[in-house]
Image 1: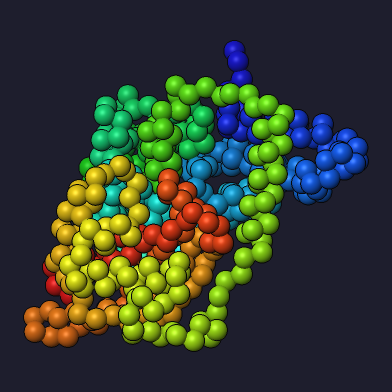
Image 2: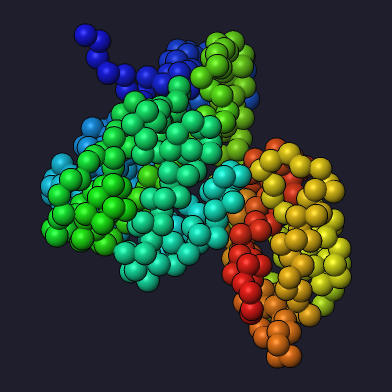
Length: 425
């Protein structure tokens, strides 16, 4: 009987491991390279550090070995630092402490970023209003409300994406080739665990979100943070499963790269790393024009705050085509379709004016722009403060360091969810 495969054996990770071995061979002769190829050889200065960092490829397997049978699995968008800390706590302080740590990691920031990533898939995006409500319930400790809602959404999302069956069906296949979340030790284990039959009414506190028992009224003490956090983790892991499935990785082949390509990739990685390390966030105290109430065209070019100001001015003036061009779209739509969707979403509540309050540069490609919008609703003036998430992206929606050319600041529509879908402000 063959041994179960590990995540580190996935072709994409194995390819990187093979590249590392090739680069290590060159690293051993780097003193010679310095003579003939001084520019390329400089890239090897940080190789020992990179080699040490490559140990992260062992982390997901170690995580799943300890936690998958408890209802937690490693997934692509999960923080490696969280995984490593959970493993350490499991090994040194025990399972209860480790699970408490994982539960607490699903806090407001985690949910904010997790829900933001969900918007990149149509089936998640169609359900984003309900997901946002589940988030509000979770943060307000209304676990009795968010857990059943998330379980039902999880089932429907998987059914739609797989075009076959839901997350909790006996025949559900949650494995995808070359995926972390959808590895055979990942979501498939969680789906089987969550689907276990619960034939007796139970009044003891649950530690696992047993779907049948919860939705059929057999589990009477399911409403706790541990169970809720595990459902959020499953939802975020399912988003990564969807990425792998939609990318049709099961039909892809891994092409071996030439030594030149490996070297070029390595040099480019080092260049990107230096750009990120050299970038520094701005301070509001050093931005003299904030807070700002003037025209967008007077703000500095290619800044997130100018993009937001232009976006809101187009919103005020009903220019939905221009408004749509500032939004992030994860699917291919015509300009007319985008304009129509923007009119539908943004046409219900139109601001009268705006003020840029402040900015927060979170990362080399991410800035939050805090804006105060003024509306009229039921003959009353109402002010709404919105935290607008902007990303610096290339044409394929890949993040770029803001100092790079050929990028554009784009706005995440989810920033305005509380306004767009509210019947009244």
